[in-house]
Image 1 (cartoon, helix red, strand yellow):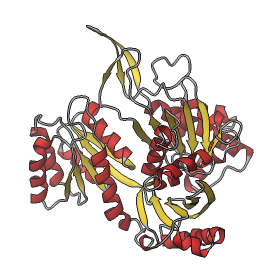
Image 2: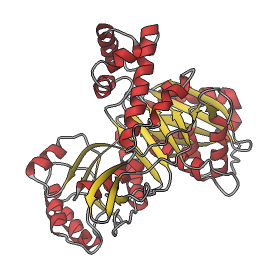
Image 3: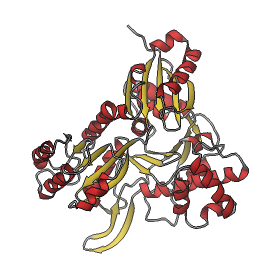
Length: 469
């Protein structure tokens, strides 16, 4: 019988294949290593190089006995579309569920689907469509119509239905008659104020692992691993939830936020129970304890141009102290050469300014807001999640992990005194995932929760002073 003294935790990214080796007895990180990704040609090449480094570190026998788990965000991640009924409720709930499963959402549609909607949906490079809407026992007419429109589309990919259970049999029949794959799950919003995303997230992850992995150039690596567990963003979400809540043996850290800045996107994860802000009435989709949002236009390399636009005219140049012409040249090169590092003083200043912009904008998109209204018995309404109670903000991702003073970049996730309508914390402790180990902890948490939590504590450093947390 194999004794697992170590775990080898792999992440297949679009830029790098990464590995973390964890000592399961001590809860220590023994090795972190990365190799340029070879998923586009042969994923086993980079994996073999990573495995060779692991063998050199812990020895051949220990490596062979080690538990080997993996996540993946390669080849565009898990690309999904979401179709709901109302934008403020079921469509938002569907997006939250898809994000929680680790997806990258390419298109969102709501209401009574038109031919133009279906044509637009069919033009996207999707791998799964999530179809939802309605409370259990509610009306089914629009759901039936949307099922007929989707079933008649040019899309030949898995559809997942997680709406009103009263329409489930009809939806299954409509898709079956069109010879389309349909997977029926529990309703995401079964009742007023109810949110049940875990079952559909499990269906989505199962499809990713058993069907879509083989379409992403990873079929050759599966025999070399014990399990490909989940998409990388889902691993980070699982890690953050564990870190916030803790286990019976290891206490959690309480309400927190994770900021993950990449070349193409910025992900924000928050872990806190939803509460009304100072008596405001909450409207819209319910919010769960763990929430993830993805900003596909806020990235450090391939999305740097759109991030610059979102920051506002001249803001990037003014913050970095670099001319418009030089900024244009640098960003154009970075969008072409996505693995480029910031080397010159001007490039480093632009890199820092982009990171500050990504943090500031993505945090405000993630957080809810309050609005004053003129209605009987209601003074204020709250849309979205109240994360004012977050006490720690943790940075992960290349620019934050490698930065000498990441606290200055993370500070933009807190609201300023004049932003009274934004439900972000006013102040927080800033930390960094110094070993870039959160994805690894998320993988490990599926089998070794206590060790995964200790691993994260070992990886955390103050974002301002560098001490171990």
